[in-house]
Image 1 (tube, rainbow, N blue to C red):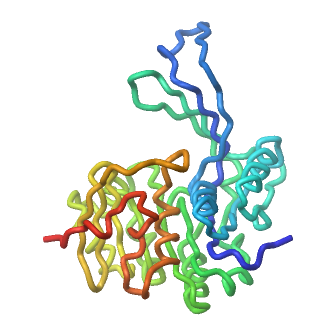
Image 2 (cartoon, one colour):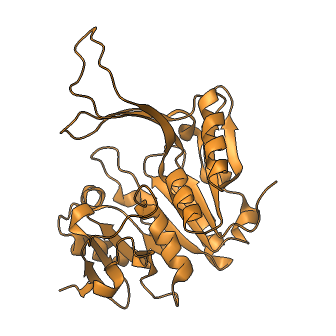
Length: 296
């Protein structure tokens, strides 16, 4: 049954992640290297955000696509077990579920092998119009990476969500250097919170300074621009404040850390008013609002 009462619609990329526990070295041709564990888990912007929101007590629904294969069934079962509504997950017949093989070598950064699969068929038209009338936040993750998500079609969906009283949150994934700004110009005026990381923002804008990046996105129409910077914290700009926020140690009590795309919708749900920088108001995970400094 469709969960019409989901507070957040989390739309976009769904992935089956195959993760190996750290190994001593990459295998040579024909060599077998043993790993302590190989884990099949949920990945992708939309799935990660929905799972984390569910952990924080938010009713979340995923909107996306999986393939007609065993991995599609496993991913949807895992989402359901996490309390996430999957009634708006479509099955792309004849396609594989998107998958990523994540290779961990001790002492090295992770390596990724990815297949796009059913995510290639996802479009803004997959977001059920009737759900926009009931949700409080519409989050879309992976824009600029999904080939079938068109700017004007998505702008219409975001505008409809805003008209119904929902907040809109846009996250991006930039696959390679290219011209991306034109694909945001007509969309950002319908975005309440825009959430790129500093590397994505640099590829889009050509600017290296996160504050200038955020200000440019604001000039293009985004209500609030948040540039995430990993260990460097975050920068937030809207029509009332310009903030730089650091990262602070916290006690981890819930397993894995929370995905930035889930913190932002959670903060928007809890924000005191529409101008509050709620995207950084996130269950104490980063604790940045209270300690944020006004940006120069």
